[in-house]
Image (cartoon, rainbow, N blue to C red; front, side, top):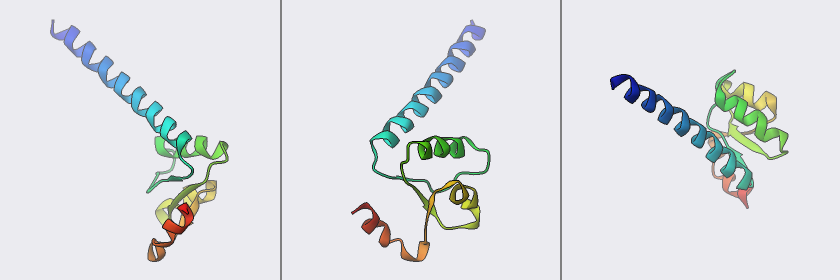
Length: 91
């Protein structure tokens, strides 16, 4: 019986991950812009951003050495000293 419970638990984790991925795509599709705090090189978040950029939807991220990969892909950097300008971007 323990084996069945383990398999059900693993199935729930997979379904939760898939639902989470779809909800991220859904909300990104509804959004005018997307803001990503950080996405490591070759990460799932970076892959997500690549997909969003193919939609010609603007992605913003903090201007930082940690986000050079996102900025190189086409994300627009937001200077942390001028975060108040972010409100103007959203209009």
